[in-house]
Amino acid sequence: MRPYSFRMGTETQPENSPQHLLQKWMGDLPYQLLLLEKVLLLEGFSFDYTPKSLDTLEARLLEHYDSVQDTKKRTEFVESAMAYLGEVLLGIAGGAWGWNTRPVDDLPGQPVVWPDAELELSPVAPMLLISYALRIRTGTAFAKEIERLRQAVAERQHSVPGWEPVKEHTPRVDPRAPLPEDPALTAWLAERTEALPAWAENAFDGAWRWNFHPDTLDWLEAVVRQRFATVEEFDASRDEPFVQGACWYMGEVIRRNKGAVWQYIPFDSDADPGVPGSRESVWTEVPFVDQPDKRVGGAAVPLESLRELLPKEDDGKGKDGLSDVLFCFRSSSYAHVGALLQRLAMVSREKVDSVLAKYAEFAYQELPPHEVPDALEAFGVAISAHGDDVDDLEESYAGILKEAAALTDGAVTITDVRLREDEVNGEVLEFARNGVLVTQQTEHTSDDYLDHLAIVEFIDHVDPDPGHDTRRFYVVQFVRLRDANYETYFVFATPEQAAVLEKELGLELR
Image (tube, rainbow, N blue to C red; front, side, top):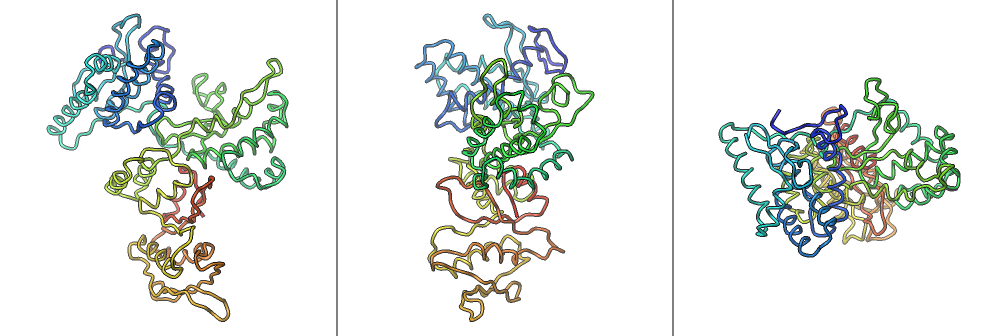
């Protein structure tokens, strides 16, 4: 154990002990980071946790101190900046958060970041580094600290080729793999999916509203309030089809619009009281949606969110807004999609780097659901059929088939694409797949628009032979928001890769 470096433990610590103070700081980290992103730095700051972003953060700190006189607001900004600064430093030099016990003003110490032990460096106190930056006002204090840490890493790598600093996982901040899907969750999801049409007819008085658009959460909220007057009434019906269907629908809106995943934690008799897995935790034995693979991702138990809409018999008022829950979740980004594709071995690290460099201006910005398939195409694992007018139908079909065949790495070749009139079938599209003629009936209401249903049917012909290559083209279904594109997307993946993309990106692949 390093001097005055205390790591979190599960046991209860005295309130002013270093262990307890570190636990409290670590527990507040997600809130501090979200406060900085959602409230304090709204425009022009890329929350990508890269060293370059610290130049902007330091400039904003100097600007904030010049323009804000309220001590409380200054302190709020500094604490959130400490959290972000510390996480960036740990990303460069590895290591973990610790606690320095030396009192600072009226505080019983302060959080520090301990670089990877192999670097043999002293801890860095983000608060002291920020104070130094505010004092010298050069705008380069953070950059110089970054350079110092990078130099230490480079020297270690020179001595030990291949060595990389290791950052300890920061709970609820660093991405992690989703939990293995529990059989109870698998069965529940299948049951709710099958029951959707009947539930939607009952809940929404007509199935047209169950399109998973974020606005439908307002309808769901209204229906829940109409059905139940109090929490007690809701609790009495929690296991009935309507409530279970409402939980599933709310979770699916979050999943499809934000790229969350369904999770389930079974009861664990060895779990400490109050922690997930224990009887006292609201996360135990109930389906919930989570974003474990995203930095500072959101999480919610739909059952609890719906329950909180209603007043208890003794207080008379519930909370507002299912849409507020959606706001707490983080959408996908080009960087997130790239990392997932690399993890699935669908693209190389070099391909990810090149795409992120190409889209550097918005690589870390959140993507609405209809732009996620476009990101898949940018990384070269998907193709699209244009939704607006095209100049030439035959050339457009040929282009789609050519792009699809290119993804098969030579397993399938497409030649002799021709759109012609047929006496029996009307207008048909012909092409040769590996030399064998394929004919597809098409229907065009205009010479300017592709027949997307026909494309969905003939794209299967570009699939490689399943005995040699299990990859195939999947039609990508996603929530289409207002003013979204009308392209049809096809992703090329193995069944295993498709299952993960569907689960973690909020898509449906068919």
